[in-house]
Structures are given as C-alpha cells and as structure tokens.
Image 1 (cartoon, helix red, strand yellow):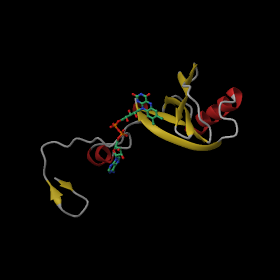
Image 2 (cartoon, protein in one colour):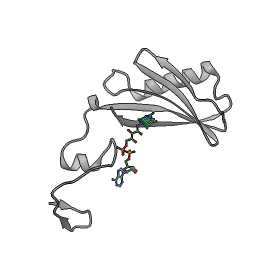
Image 3 (cartoon, rainbow, N blue to C red):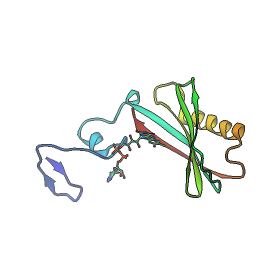
Length: 120
Ligand SMILES: Cc1cc2nc3c(=O)[nH]c(=O)nc-3n(C[C@H](O)[C@H](O)[C@H](O)COP(=O)(O)OP(=O)(O)OC[C@H]3O[C@@H](n4cnc5c(N)ncnc54)[C@H](O)[C@@H]3O)c2cc1C
C-alpha cells in the first residue's frame, strides 16, 4: 500500500523505480544506495567555448578518466570516481580545474560547476 502524494492510497503487486541514483522510490520502499554502490561525476560546463573534439585522459589515481565532451555553446568537462575511493567531489573538481588550466582547453570560458551521483 503506497501513499500517492495526494493523500490517496494505491495497492500494487510490483513497484518499478526508474528515478535515478537518488531514487525516491528506492528511499521510500527500501533504503538509499550505499556509497560503495555509487560513483561521483563532477566538473564544469565551460560556457562560451566550442570544439569538434572529444578529449579523454586516463587517470590512475583514482582509476578513471577526465573528459571534455563538446555540446552546443559549451564543453562538458568532468571526472568520475567511485564514491568510496577516498576522494570527495570538491577535490575531484579541483583536479578537473587543474586539468583545464594545464590543457588550456577552455580558455576564456565561464566555468559552471556540476556534480552528479552515478550508479556503479
Ligand atoms: C556526467 C555523466 C556522465 C555519464 N557518462 C556515462 C557514460 O559515458 N556511459 C554510461 O553508460 N553512463 C554514463 N552516465 C550514467 C548514466 O547517465 C546513468 O547510468 C543513466 O542515466 C541511469 O539511468 P536511469 O534511468 O537509472 O536514471 P536517470 O537517467 O537519472 O533517470 C531518472 C529520471 O527520473 C526522474 N526523477 C527523479 N526523481 C523524480 C521524482 N521524485 N519525481 C519524478 N521524476 C523523478 C529524473 O528527472 C530522470 O528523468 C553518466 C552520468 C553522468 C551524470
């Protein structure tokens, strides 16, 4: 039996949650995903810079990669690591910022930070 949010109740044999890594369905019916089930993706949207190149650099620590994906009007630049890898979103974003400075891939861009959890 589930509360539908409007005060009414609904009975179903199955509930399929397709609402992502922060799943409300999962939190409501079981438990949130644990950190060891999640990765963190974080970085910057670099507004005002365009490219026709996808750039990827593999990183050993934490194991993963930094990417720059071109989008209309901006680059989506980021890094991903397991959430329990011992490095937080702020430190990962600093690495992305350092990579942007070193590669000069987004010179003059306005950097808009982002972070998302991803299921492993
Ligand atoms: C920066 C980044 C890069 C990625 N790169 C890759 C990649 O290269 N390869 C790969 O395989 N995967 C990649 N992923 C992961 C991939 O995006 C996810 O694994 C995939 O989108 C998960 O699909 P999903 O349907 O489970 O959830 P989502 O795509 O997150 O969809 C969930 C949906 O539920 C909706 N929703 C959430 N809560 C509610 C609510 N309370 N009420 C109503 N609607 C709600 C959301 O609006 C959304 O539309 C990447 C993710 C990120 C963030």
